[in-house]
Amino acid sequence: MNAIELLLNRQSDPSLTMPAPNNDELHTILTAGMRIPDHGALKPFTISVYTDEGLSKLSRAFVKAMTLKKAEQAKIDKVAKMPFRAPMVVVVSTDYQPHEKVPEKEQLITAGCVVHAMQMAAFSLGYGAMWRTGDLAFNNDVKSSLNITLHNDIAGFLYIGTKAKDMPVKPERYFEDRVRIING
Image 1 (cartoon, rainbow, N blue to C red):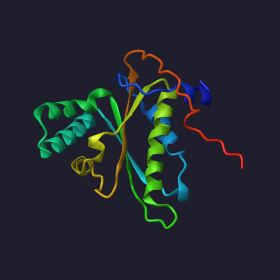
Image 2: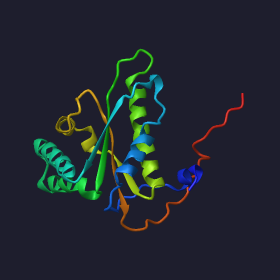
Image 3: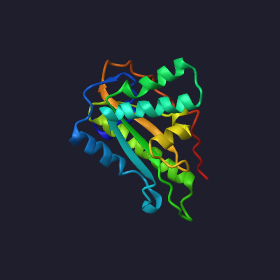
């Protein structure tokens, strides 16, 4: 698959199972994440990879956050299962760096590009991947449990694994109503 085929055909896949990428494949995925645009070469992000017992740690962080929020038991039960949707979950958070020319907004975009590049790499290696955010990405108790300082943000949870089933190909999205071409 060439790069254009990858970009035109990739789609998120929520049905993921074992196996997860092996160490060499994970190395490739992480290396792809490091090739993103990064104004000032600040590396304003941190990547944490959760597998095996790490998924249980992630689950406990989610449960703790919802318990502290006094969520209903059904919600607590739901979040407890979330990390097990895939055999690997990669959490990308910001690590904001003070810089006069690179505002935090731009650094958050850089962290988002890390997630995107790793999702593309996983897809190119034949894996499925799903980039998720949601309430848990914006929850200070989750950040605290994952050793992410409250000043920083979670750019995403990237679920990676083997596709459990073939997904229907999503219809093409047309760009015409989203693009303006200005020639002067």
